[in-house]
Amino acid sequence: MSTVLVIVIVVVAVIVIAMLIAAARRSRQQRELGQTQVEAQHDDVSHHRERADENRAEAALAEERAKRAKAEAELNDERATAREQELRE
Image (cartoon, rainbow, N blue to C red; front, side, top):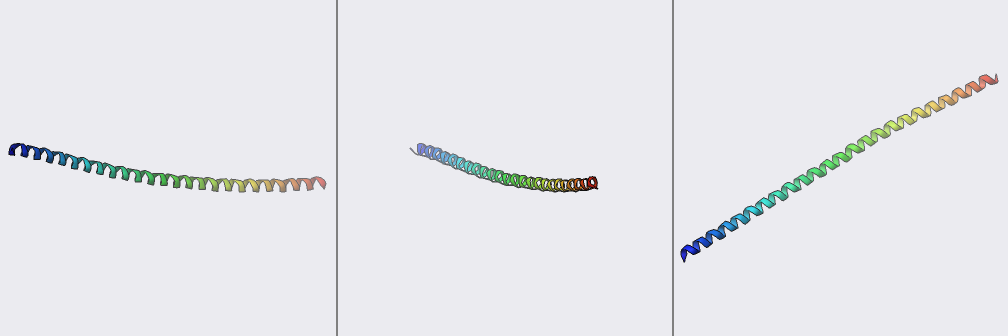
């Protein structure tokens, strides 16, 4: 009877150890997954910030182009007015 009892105790101990190892592995995998998700979220934030910076740069460039176009239009208006005055004289 004692031999059977020792075998049962050893089997139970092995099962408990296996369960503890499995639980530790699952915990580690969940922690790694959490870290990966946090890194991905940080990458998303960085990506959105980069896009915002790019959009701001494009907007500034478009604004500069609009100012130049307005200045050219005003210059052309001035030239047209000057030509009209020359024709009237």
